[in-house]
Amino acid sequence: MSGDVDVAVVGGGVIGVMTAHEILSRSPGTRLAVLERDAVGQGASRRSAGLHIPRGATPRVREMTEYSEDFYRRLRAADPSVPVTPLPMHVVAPASAAGPVRERYVRTAAPAPVRELDAPRVRLGPGEAAWRVAGCQYADVPALVQWLARKVRHRADVREAVAVTGVEPAPGAVRLRLGTGEVLTAGQVVLAPGPWTGGPAWRDLLAPLEVRVKRVVALHVAAAPAPGDGAVVLEEQDAFLLPLHERGHWLFSYTSRQWDVDPDAPPRGLTAGQLAEGRDLLRRYAPGLADRAVSGRVFCDAYSPDRVPLIQPVDGDGRVLFAGAANGSGYRLAPAVAAAAADRLAPARRPDPHRERSDR
Image (cartoon, rainbow, N blue to C red; front, side, top):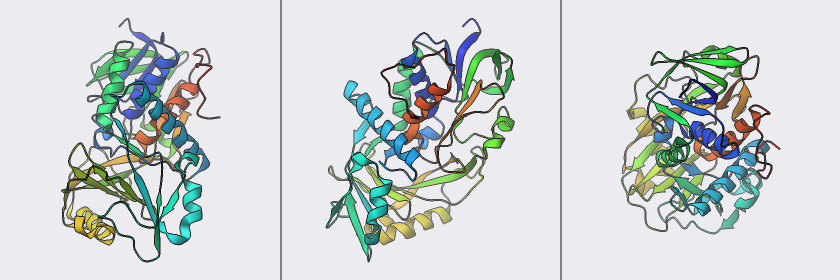
């Protein structure tokens, strides 16, 4: 590489690589670099459940969900090798919550009440009801990031194990200091650090965004899903049970309330308290699975103050753009975040006129 690039994407997770893919799809001639301190797809993306739930707590998130759902549908239609798999899904909530369920889920989800769940391991509690929902799918997120990276590599400079140690906005460009001792000059920079929002190179730039990092916990349930098993979302508990057919076990994700954690700080494994909390909730809905939850995955993610992903400039000239804080839904909303990031880049980089803008 000669040195200067039009755009540098910092972060090789699902949002960073998706953004690079989106930019190059719109403007194939863009000189682009992806900088990742580890290997692409090996940070928070490696621990992602990869479940697409067709809902959103706000109109903006529902809009982003619909955009992303359509993107993944088209991606899979164009190339069936994409590691994205449609999945049946049910929602469990109080019977009195029929209105909120219809409001939260996107139009194409079409929640339909059912008398009983198709998932024999899950039972309804007193006063609860279930709805069948369309549009659910899940992905092997690390494999998806690698799939996207293969599309990007022949048109961009993808640098792995190259940390960014300094971000220095200057008139007309941004200087990126790299852990290799090099300096890369970019016309624009997209910061997509996932939960590493407190990284020394960009901590001061991102501080005004008030992003917080929260622990994310999911238990692995040592029981093989049946071929027709689908996802079950516990709406009020903000939890879900997901059959990982390719791995041969279930995953139970539930809400952790541990905030302001450091992605690089221990403990990194599952604690006794986390295991007990997850099992207690699992016993209410799938008692036959609770004692088989013996391991799991623990990491963290970045959350915005209003629970809507952030895509906005963080320097005075608008050359450094933050894209992230997807609130535990990085995979689900990555296509919409990437499209919005591409929209916010230099006006000279014209978007495809046939592509619907995600922020309309």
